[in-house]
Image (cartoon, rainbow, N blue to C red):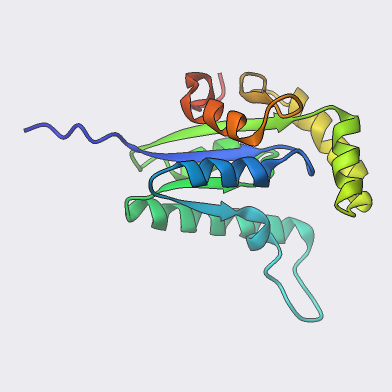
Amino acid sequence: MSNNKKPAAVYLISGPLGVGKSTVSKSLANAMKQCALIEGDLLLHIYRGETEPPWEERLRLAWLNIVAVTRNLLGHGLDVVIDFVVEEELEWFRGQLSDVDVTLRYAVLHAEPDTLMGRLRQRGDEQYINRSLFLLNKLKTSRGNGPFLLDADRKRAEELAEEMATDPRFIYTGIK
């Protein structure tokens, strides 16, 4: 008797600040029958009190927590949608799940600089404009991201979520 159950899926949605990662991630998660949504920023900003670890340590711990929560959820039969900026962690993340039967889908949302600046101003986050534009350039030119770029300027969140979930070009198997 064969088991035709498809492997679980992890959807990793990256992009600069203000591009719509959270909106697309929520749209994707809401369209699925059974999944969990991990908002990476919540794990990055968990610290309280007078001191917090330096940025590099906070980021490292956030990724370790994302992996741990993802593995736990996958172990309970859930697909996982992750909303977080991926700079250099993609191969490491894939390696952390290498022993799990999972399909990793990866998309890097991008938009025109004017769109990002407008969205950040509209939500009162002007202080993040330079960081967003830096990330936009870094993510668009980063080795290996090219096939996974998804233009968030001209499509609604539901369309972007559907494309990421169905188009085989978003299946990540490693850097080519």
